[in-house]
Image 1 (cartoon, rainbow, N blue to C red):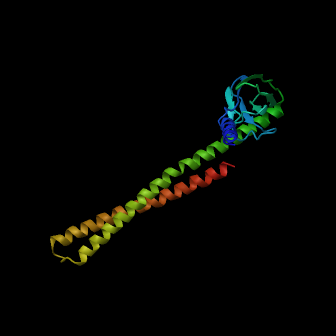
Image 2 (image 1 turned 30 degrees about the vertical axis):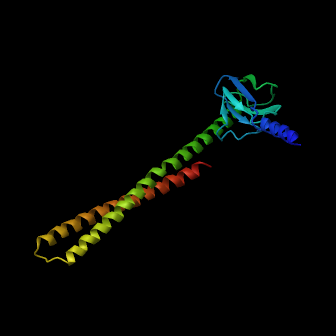
Image 3 (image 1 turned 45 degrees about the vertical axis):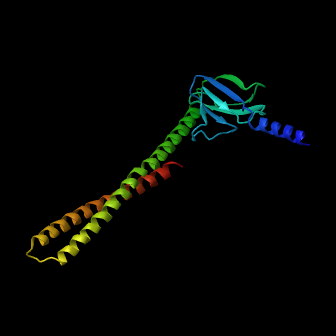
Length: 205
């Protein structure tokens, strides 16, 4: 019984750690977008791979894989590739140029939409910079306000004619001025961050 259990366990472990099959895709010309397991992929979205590419099927038992190729100026191509029994399979696809102006315009429309989406995502990433700056300047604002409050208390506890009073008044004005500057930077940073995030969110769709 134990021996059977060990055999089954070894078989399961062997299946779990079996290497997945790999498909190497080359195209003529290169730099074709490759979409996996999509009959009619949305070309305005970024591809999974760009040729030449090694495609990992993540399944050692897979017998085939569906690839769709998109390259502006060439016919869209969808192929179901039968995989070799070995670990790696190879395919070279020579793409056919197209002269249909309407089809070319549709391809360019997809590319423009994709570029807009990529730009939107980049804006959303860049919005983190002003947000971070806003947090830092907000912390500085809080610090300067607390120091101004301390200086204000010192003013109340000092004689008007004493040097300590003059020093406390100068410190209060200095902290107050720095607090206003940091506060303005905080507001500006968060407004900029929200603007970039909103515009990026709109462009990313």
